[in-house]
Structure formats: C-alpha cells, structure tokens
Image (cartoon, rainbow, N blue to C red; front, side, top):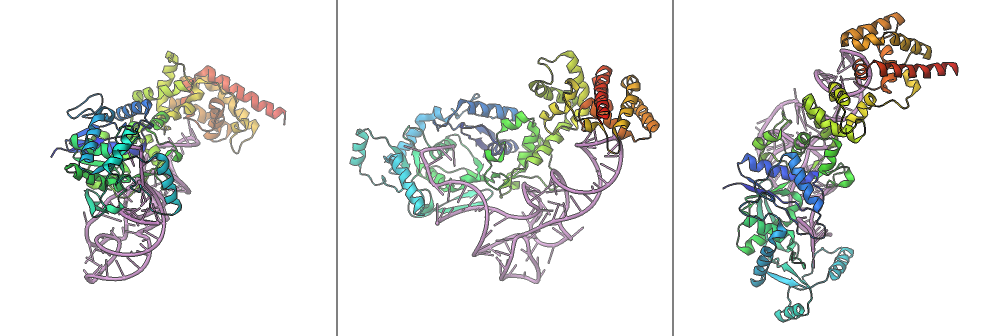
Length: 493
RNA sequence: GUCUCCUUCGUCUAGUGGUUAGGACACCGGGUUUUCAUCCCGGCAACAGGGGUUCGACUCCCCUAGGAGAUGCCA
C-alpha cells in the first residue's frame, strides 16, 4: 500500500513549533517510505481565518525546504486541497448521514449551549451537549426549517458499545461510546464542516493511508472511526504523536516565549537547526547521534522510534544547535545570512557600500564562533562601524593596575600602533609582548586597555584582528579619546 | 466532574529480563587563549511509589500517585 500522509493545518495563526513538528514527521515518514506528502488547508473556520496565516504556512514550509507532493498551488489527483473549495462535498456527506438517520438537525442557539455548559460546570457534571434536538419529529424539524431557524447537523453517537482504533505507537485505544463527546456538530450553521467531518471525508477521498497527528486528538479518534463506519469506509492507520510542552509542562503556547517559526527565523535561527532540534523532541535515532540534516531524516525517520511521552521544548538546546550549524557554514554563506541583520540595525548602510562589505567579509572569521543567533552579529560588530559613544572609563583600567599605569600602556601602544596595523598577526603580538616586558606587566594588561579603548567593551573579538579591521586612523583616534578620559581622571583625583 | 494518554538525570533521550543505567543540552570545575566565544578534559545528576511474575526486573502485569490532553457551530 502506498504511504500517503498529510499535514492539515488551519490558517488561523502563524505556524508554530508544534505544528511544524507534525508537518516534519509526516513529511519524513512519507519520504522514508517513498510515499506522498500532502498539504491540505483546513480553512473551515471562517471567523478566525486570515490570509496572513495562509501565506505564513507557505513561506514557512518553503523556508524549511519541505515540499509537498500534492496540495495548494501545485494541485494533484485528489484536489482541491483547500477545504473551502470542497464546500459542497461536506454538505453532500452530511446529508447522506441525515438520510440514513445517523445524524440529525439541531436548532439549539449558542446562548442555550453556553448556558448549558455553565450549569454543567457549576454542578460538576460531565460536559457536553444534552442531545436536546436528537429526537425531534420530522414535523418539528420541517416547521423550524420553514420558520427560517438556523440549524447545524449533529452526529448520532451510539449510547451503547465501544469503539477502538489501532495506533502504531499506542496500540489499541478503546473508548466506550457513552464516553465519546455527545453528538458533535458535523456541519455548522454557515454550511462549513467542522474538523470531524472534513478530515474524515477528505482523508478518505484523498486516500490517506496514515494519520500522524498530535496526541491531543486521541479523544476524538474513536469518534472519527464511528464516522468512517457510518459512511461504510475503513479508517487509515493512526499514529498519535507526543505533544510538545513548555517549561511548565503545559501545551506549548505564546506565554512560553517565541513559538512561531517566523519569530525564530527573524531572530536568526537557521532552518537546519530548527529541523534538527524539533525532530529530536519525540524522536531519536540512537544513543550516539543527534545531528541530522533534512535529507538524512528523509531517509532515516521511522515511526518505531517515536517516543510516547510528551517532550519539553528546550530553547537553550535549540540555541546550541543553532550555534553548531552557524559554525558549519562557509564564510561567504554566513556573510550573506548576516547582512540583513546589519542593515536592519543600521550598522551598515542599505545597500552596503564596498568599503563596508570589505570589512564585513574580513570580520566574519572573528565573528562566526561568537554567534549563537544570526542577530548576535549587530552587537558584536557595531564597534567596527560606529563610533563608541560612551564607555566606562573604569573598564579601561585592568585589574591590578592603576590609572597612571594604564596611561603609560596606552601611550606606549600609541607610539607603535602604525607598525601593529601593518604587521601580521604574530608580528603584532610580538610587538605587544615587547611593551608588556618593558613595563613589566602581563600581556593581558596591555591588551585590555587597548581593547576597551577600541571596542568600548571588555568583551570583544580578538583585539589585534579588530584594530586591523578598523584601521590605524580610527584606532589612534579612539586611543587618544581614552587617554584623555584617563588623564582627566588623574587631574580630578 | 468525566474520559483518555503518559511517567529513565533539571531538560531531550538510549535502553525491549542479567549494563558500573549510556549520550546530548544546561549547570559546576579545569585546560588552551588576548577578554569573550570556540574547542578539549572532568564533575554533578535519573529508572515516581507499592505490589506481583521471575533465579533475576528500568525493562512484563496490576494498583496508587503525579502530569498532560480532551470534553466548542476551534482545529
């Protein structure tokens, strides 16, 4: 049997980590089995639908390099793949159920339903529809319809018996029919189907072989099986994926921080890192390997290695993965990736000047191993392009040194700076070592005042490399400013 | 409230009856170094609890506890 799986998001919000993990698992499963990965847009919630969300879905999958074999924009043999374009189909099948007496019209207002739920909550009763309209006579129904009262179509869940489905991970999952959500809505009053109807109808006609979806769907699994039975169809194979949680163990959501993929993208996470990390929550290959490219996962992924327990999303580990992938990039590639961030922060001009580009290219080797996120580049490299507006004069003076000593160090440096800028890395270091020896201080005590003077911070890329990037003129200028500060301090006691 | 699913270091996980319970992130030390970072080395740290089954249980079964999810004219 050909493997056909689908990712079926609803365009009501930005693609988030949990959703994309489901998409990835489906995609990898399809690829590893030589099957088809189908994208289906479940836009049946007209209230919450947004065009932005739909665009985000496409751009996010594109960014991750996930291509669908059938779906919107490319079509396929079982389209359309956007549910709003399949509108009539759902009505047709809801009507069929109605005719067969397996569903019924419900005229309850949302006000009544709300009140009902409130009372159930208060009375600590079990929640759910009270099947108020289940036994309306045909006359009553006709009368209400001709009176123009809006209605929905509800599924008749049997009172007796039990329903089960086979889950690849969980084994046999059984539910008593009386515990299934009582008579859920299949077709809404606006004529659009609910998820329950739409997913069953579409999965059937799209010949979906496996359903990989989050475990939050387990409770409705039995309902869906009942639906398949009502239509006389056989259900696909289920595989309920463990959920992705926040630090507090609750379902991952906005309050845990960034959860949408665009946010990660904007902050400078690489798709490689996202794919790799996200795939490792809930899935693992073995005990000695955790780096996987998308291409490798397309081959190695397997359902058997999926974990049953929910996993906590660890931002720290994602960041670590990101740093690892940044360091795997070639310098030209990394340069290209970093440019937009420098422009956005106004560190360099847009478009870049040749002079700036020269510096950016030259600085990358110094920057690369200091980046966790691409966006880190701005803070790290600002001193190369911008004057230092204010820095801590106290930071200029290294530990175990006084102001006078620091002044002497900087003056010594000033006298040789021209040689340093034009020298090679090692040669430059030798010159500084000479100063250190002469003044009987450590090399670090020579370089630290220079570092602070030139970069404005005690933390910076290697200082010798940095001054060569900045050039003699700027370096001298900044050392002089630092010296003035220190001298003023001496005068003021 | 009811139903369902889950339970190995703080976190992600390996482990399918016999292991000093392994790895990674984080954290803490140490080293390299020009600060930071990178990198290297080391350390800390787990089988939720209780019953069985068995010569032997992290592994199989049951119970308890805890956690999560569902219970929408949202998906």
